[in-house]
Image (cartoon, rainbow, N blue to C red; front, top):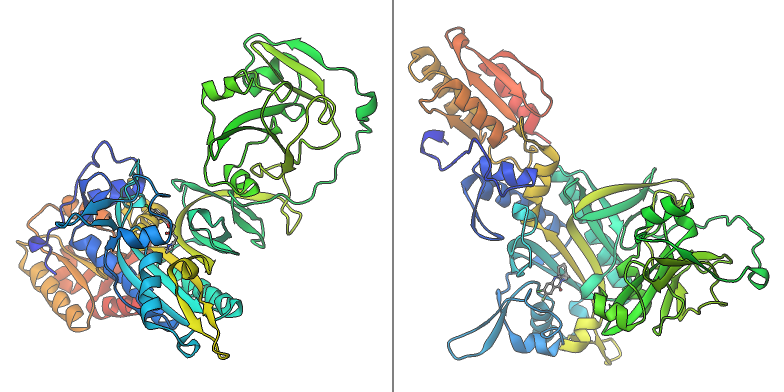
Length: 570
Ligand code: 9G3
């Protein structure tokens, strides 16, 4: 295509409110434009990449035996009432009324809809297993949309749903999808890890993996062993067994509790400094409200509470930090909170539930207590693993060190079980004629989010972007230096015609612009192969640059055609 006629509005500067690298580059490269917070237009370049990513997803879904369909975004509220989720989700679920005042939700996901589709038209076990998928726009009214396509309020998702007669079938489908995801993210040129994850709000029984694109901007933290045998979202990651040094501590003979005057020392750092102790000799008392009830959670001073583990341990729906007044009502003094004298249940992390005497807050401003012993000075409602793993922990699989990376969630596969099929009546007649609920799985890919994840990994604020071969908007960027030089124009036109006839997608920069402007734009647009027609056009020679490998040289047209064919044949 001739760039002179294309809508590719490159920018020299990113808007001030764009923080993430991918947000800046997709704006500056003329890929996207914001219409509203978290709502974007894919300009022609962005749309070309989005189509290629979607096509890769489609190919691999079809190869995995899934059938593509397209469900509506307008979902009757009744379905969400049937599944019991209409009131579970707050303002994130976009609700609207039609002209007859009937209530609808704009689909944030499609478990309710797909289960209704299947329950109405699939009844015999002979039709199962069946996996259906769509590539469709989702709506989630995020409180804080940000970072461009990374967290939008309207975004493109591939969501697939599998229906099996038994758990073995689901397990087979689950891994079938898992491997399809590996192929998809590899073809999209992503550096990704599959990690054990928490099922989160969707619930479901048994196992879920997230696919994480490694990137510092990522909201998630993934924990893995050095050799990759273990990988888990921090929400889920567990520590390997530790050999506890026997301190010979005897609760029976431990000295009595003593008050410590610790004026103003309300942080771990201030305490360890002022008392000259290590953080692991302290216990932090965190006040939470769990499904409306205030509780205390105790973790060691060098650990952090993992709210997902806490929620799962207690089987709770909602977990949040307590407000100041809620903590005070429980007898805790914020900044000096401790377990002694509280009138609420106390959950104790297993690394605190060991024979030891601790320093804790005294529930009195400017005071702490020492020699506090679990069992003697306070009792635990229950103990469990409610903390994040740290660099000091060992891997549960290899026993070796743990590595921590930030990641962007680009995929998520779930074993749902019968949660939706029971609520929404997706049942089948088994060979003995007995009615059974279908066993479901669901599988999501953030298709539009992939544009940002790839740009985070392969973009550079100064150097621009280099798209992977399979999803680049164009395959070759042909740059004509001077539109006034006949030899250059003739050679560039000849190359353009020849490459197009060879089926190569060419972006031809035929604009009457200075070379510097053309190269700056080309860096931002990010096409991996660049052919520059300049001074040596008279000798039939051009500059060929492979921006993926960095190599470049002066070649004739035949050599260029050969280099291009090599780069794009898989
Ligand atoms: C909602 C809203 C937001 C949501 C959900 C429901 C996330 C919700 C989880 C899933 C699970 C899987 C199929 C594809 C893969 C992911 N955010 N989830 O259910 F009403 Cl407002 O979407 N769905």
